[in-house]
Length: 89
Ligand SMILES: [Zn+2]
Image 1 (spheres, rainbow, N blue to C red):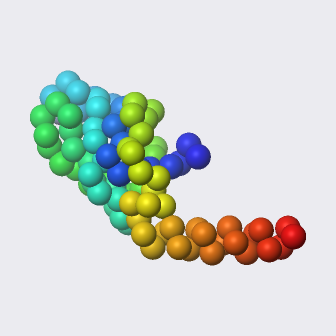
Image 2: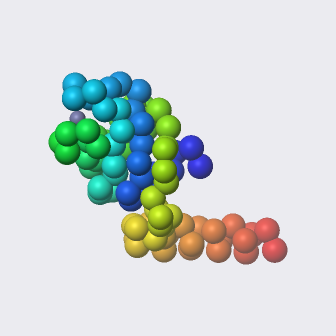
């Protein structure tokens, strides 16, 4: 759960951007996370690990779960969950 990244998340990073803002909006999720500075509009890409390391907190979570914004992951996750459920039953 703490590692969750959603599209359109408004996040605060540990380190402030030179423009003075520490708030960023997640604009793309893939192998890399693309985010836009809320202060100056600059777009930066970080890999997932680096993003999570630098993220301080999520101010406002994006409206859609990552499963929804990431079609593919959703199916994998659902399949995995279905397997788990089957094993439990
Ligand atoms: Zn900035």
